[in-house]
Amino acid sequence: MSRWRRLPLLCLVGVALASLWWLWQWQYAQSEAEARRHADNRLSLYGSSLQGALERFTYLPGLLAHQPQIQAALLDPAEIFVPQVNAFLALVAERSGAEVIFLLDAEGRTLASSNHAEADSFVGHDYRFRPYFYEAMATGQGEFFAVGSTTGRPGYFVSAAVGPGAPEAAQGVLVAKVSLEALQADWRRAGEKVLLTDANGVVILSSRPEWRYRRLGELTPQAREEIRRQRQFMGEPLEPLGRRLRDDSLLVGGAGLGERLVDTTLALETLGWTMHYLMPVRPLYVSARNALMGGVAVWLALLLLALWLRERQKRQRLREREAAIIREANERLEARVVERTRELQEAQAELVQAGKLAALGTMAAGIAHELNQPLSGIRTYAANGQRLLDRGRSDAADDNFQRIQALCERLGGLIRQLKLFARKGGAREPVDLVARLDFVLELLAERCRQQGVRPRSRLPGGALWVLGDEVRVEQLLTNLLRNALDALRGVAEPWLEVAIEAEAERLVVTVADNGAGIPDELLEQLFDPFFTTKAVGDGLGLGLFISYGIVQDLGGRIHAGNRPSGGAWFRVELPRAQPTGLASPSSIRESQDEP
Image: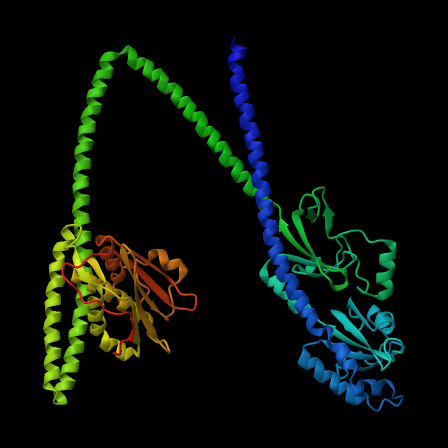
């Protein structure tokens, strides 16, 4: 019987071990995949930089081979043109960044070179054994990487045949040697393990200098003979860098001290080269180990939970046998519940008080924000009145002062709006939307004039009445138009358009401008309180928030977006109302209000 009881435990242990093994494999595979994605990205970057460095010079030998003075030097047995060609090649090498540019005759002997004045000059040396010479003589062009037999410095050689009948009747070869040491130094500074191998698997560039001129694979006798004949590496022993393991990773270093590396490669077009990005395997095992430890922790937690539940069951049975103790425990628990309830009620009261204080702060900031609008109008009419009085136009100035009085009454109305914050909204009665729009445009006329904006309104015919109250409708229109004017600051040819579309059950007001528009990632936050993209001190971020609240109270909707040709638009949908009295219909109009 005990054996059958142990069977579920053994099954659970098996499931746990299998899950931990799967977790190890999965985490290792994920880490390796991520490492290889990183390696592919880095290889693409390094490969592009290498190809770019080489392609800068591929055109140069062919271009120089057509120069008359180069061709004349090959046909001049007295070498009269050689000094001139030496100077010319030195100038081209300096300006192009090539290490050396030199000219070989048909026998492979150097006639002229950009380093003719240096101690290790190429002039007079025979390079017929180099592939860049005999390939260019045979096909018209050649390329080769080798350690210089004269200077001992490695480089990439690119060549082109010289002569009017080249390559069939080539008279010589022009060669440019490019140093890749700066590129290799950049790899070393990046702190990554990067290799470049040739077609034989020999490392020709490396971020680790000690790995250079080592091989990643075996060299055939033919390859060794060819390297010796071409003097490519000038007697380097070409020792193996490491050995390949069964999973294709590379073990670099001696036995017991070696470093196991994941080898990610990128084949290049140049000379069968291959770029390698080596990543240590140890971090992958560390990641898998950490995941395994996490899995073990989860299973231990489950085991502890099971033991705890088992112990809890024992305690429950004990409590059932001791009814008196249970009743006493229940009484203590009830007392604690009462205490906690009292504490929660006190905390709730504190939260309510904090909410009231936050609402009061928001309301006060919003009212201060909205009082600025009529005050701006008062400043505008006062300035106009002063100018009219200076010109002796007292009648017109009197009209401006009457408007100032009306704005003062509007300030009183805004103060009365404080009462609206205590309930859902204010009065709901028919309001002439066109009249309120004309009033707001007139209120903002001075600012429009200062910014050079000529507002345009597009209205349908017939009465345009909405449900609401005049103060909040004006407040809504003012906020939208001021927001558009703020967006038009600094625009060369600003324009602002207000359009009203009449539908069966609602009126749609659209305010559009040709400003900078609204970043897409900010559209969802546009109507949040205190959210603004303006400079510090230029706005509180409450205008659109208050507008959103007004539209909600009036039973409407508000949206914002960007125009395809540039600029932003705001669309407000308000419930349509029937006027209480007769209204004089207006014809369809296209007007342009001048500030």
